[in-house]
Length: 399
Figure 1 (cartoon, rainbow, N blue to C red):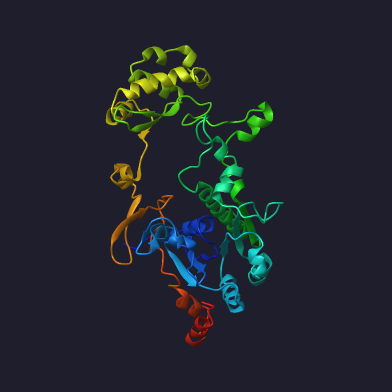
Figure 2 (figure 1 turned 30 degrees about the vertical axis):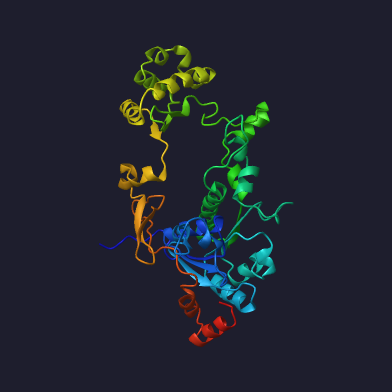
C-alpha cells in the first residue's frame, strides 16, 4: 500500500539551531515531511549529541531530536561556509535559528542578508528575550524563560522555594509556538501573496502566554497566584493522592456531576447531595475538608483498587506514570506512542511516537538522528559543488 504523503512534504528548512528550542521546532517539521538540513559545526556538532545518557558515545536524546534531519557540517565563521548557507537559504522556505540575537548578523547571516537572497523566506528566531528590548542580547535558556515567564513562581509547594518541572519545558513550549507562527507566516504568504517574514519567539513570552488567568486576576483584584503544590488553585477537587501501597494517583473531579459520582464511589453520598457543594465555588470554599476525605479513602486502598473503583464511576483518574509504566500501558501501545527503531549497531530501542496524530497524512520516523556530517557531500552536490570543490572545502576546514 502506498503511504500517504506527509503534510509538509516539499518544504525545505535550514536549521541553524543547537540544543533544544530550535532543533525541537525543526524536528516537528521533519516528522511531518519537511526536508530539514541541519547545519552543524565541524568541531563536534550540536552539543546535544553529548547530553544526558550516551550510548556508544552518542546521546539517545539526539537520535530522537534529530530524526528525519540531514546533517551538514559548515564552519559559519569561514567566508566559504557563509556562501554555502546562503546557497541553501536561497532554495529554502524556512530558516530556524536559536542563536543569541546579533550573532548571525555578525556572521553576515542576519535577516537582511538571508531575505536578500530569498525574499519569500520565513525565518523562525527563538531566543531568550526576543529580537528587541533592553534584554534582547542577553543569554537566556529555558530555565530563565520559565522563571521570567511566571511558571517557576507558581510551581511547587507554598512552604518551599519554587521548583522546575522535570523537563526543559520552556524550550519546548517556545518551539511549539515557533512552529505555529511559522506555519501561519507560510499560510499568509501562500494565501495573500505576501513576502516572507520573521517569526520572533522569546522563551519567556512563550511561557508567559501559557499562564492562564494570571494577568487579569492581578490587574482587577490584585491577586497574585502562589504555589499550591498538587492542588489546582481555585478548582476543586483536583489533586494527587497517595495509595495504601505508596503509589500516587491524580484525581480530577472538578466537574459538578463528576464530583457527585466521586463522592458516591467513595461512600460519601451525603457530600454528593450537599447543596453547598453543587458548584465549584462551594467546593473550593471547603477545599481542605474535601481533600481530607479523598486522601483518607485513597490511603485505605491499593492503587489498582482506587483506579478500578474510580474507573467504574467514570471519574477521571490516573496513576502518576513513570516511563516504566508507559512501556506496557495499553493506551500507549494502542496509539503507537512507542515506536521501534534501531541504533547504528543494530540494537533495537524504542522512541516516542509522533504527535499529533493526523488521520490522513500522519508523520513518520524515516531515520534516527544522523552521524555528524552524514549528508554533507550529498547536499553540497545538490548545490552544484563538484567532488573536487567539496574535497577542497574539507581540506580548508570549511566542512
